[in-house]
Image 1 (cartoon, rainbow, N blue to C red):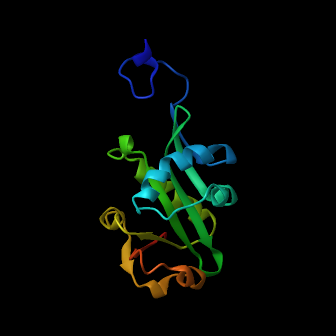
Image 2: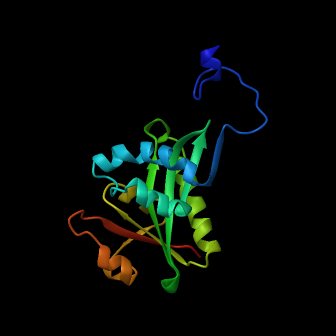
Image 3: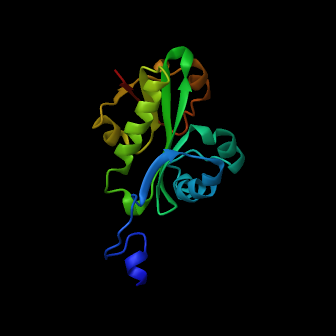
Length: 167
């Protein structure tokens, strides 16, 4: 019976709602987000975020939960003056990377950006350049970043800047 009711087990379970949901994160999701992003931070893939920073920025995060476990997350940092947004802290649990969870997050973040009146979305990435290019992002010069973001750009990370029109 345990296999029947486990998150990814084999068997049949009849439920009224999906075991998976995508939604805006709340303060109660911080533990799950930290659990998801810590290994990527330790590998240098993601920029380190403290619990306090996550608490202050939790309203910017969207998560995918499966049976109350956070399996993916991403954040939208808007720059309204420039009508541009940054998609950051994109993470998908290793067990779910071959599925479309990243795509679902990208679509949701792009929709949030459009709703906020933004016309472009950018990412800074060291490892996922091709994934973003396959989804319409193109490499651009650092000079195209919003001024406040440009001033914080970490040249040691050697992140590539990719941008997409939301039109």
